[in-house]
Amino acid sequence: MQTQDRRRRTYRFTLVLMALLFSSARPCPAVADIGPKPTMSFTWDLSEWGASPEIGQVNLYDCGDDATCTYPQLVEEMAAQRMTCDESGCFAMLYSSGGYWQLELDVDGTTLLSAPFEKTGYDSDFDVIIYPNTILLVPILSSSPAADNEPLPTPASSRYHVLLESLAFALAATLVIELIIALIFLVRKQHPRRILAWTVLGNIITVPIVWLVIPTLNAPIAVSFAMQFLTAFLLESLLYRLLGGKTLNWRGSFAISWWTNLASELLGLTFLLVFGFMT
Image (cartoon, rainbow, N blue to C red; front, top):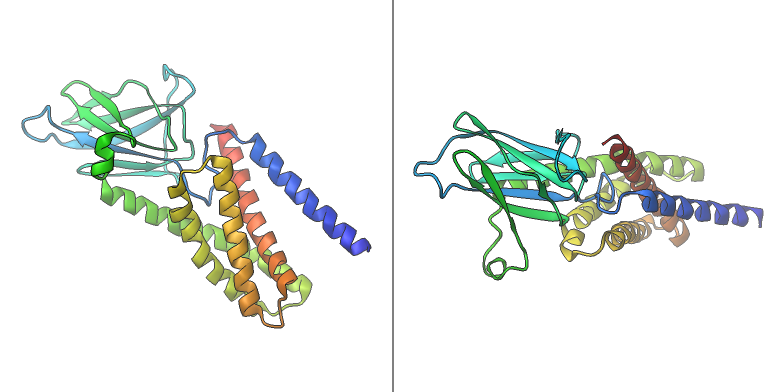
């Protein structure tokens, strides 16, 4: 009876801790460092030029909630946060999904800085009209008639490059966290270490689903968070049970999946909160 009460209190504590972490996070940022990130894409419009100019350095600045961008902060590469560019434009994966921003371009040796612009969607796309002395950003609305008939003019090579790099980072980070927790669980329960192979297999299956499938549903951020966690938890529980044989019953399968996925989500949220307070 005491063991059941202790286990019940542990589960209740972890649920409360998850709720507190999630409720204290800003409403717009990404859910966790190992989950999908807000994005912005910029497509160059060179219609004002006779011959295509040479576009050099491209910088993106985060202004937070300051519409005047008095103290812009350069967006630097940090883990999953990055921006890549090609001849058609740039694609950025970010830790922040709202607020005001500025874009800076080096065009034929001249530095051009955009007026502050607002990012209103989780994934935002812009046409960047480049003039000889300024740049103008025009949002591409997904609900516009043109968006239903042709793909968004997003720099495709940059988008896939960043997504694949970030997916690889998410898989590596998740595996490191979950393998440590799984190993602790297996040692405590005196289960064979070969079960760690199922942890690896489970993440190879679930991380792409969390990254590439769930974000396409465009659900509210709280719903997306719940769907990401439950998808990974349930699929990995099923995998542990199917491959566990006599070693892991349903109770053990649910337990190891719960603790490994909870750890990865909580550490991801902690990283996000710390990063948010620092910026």
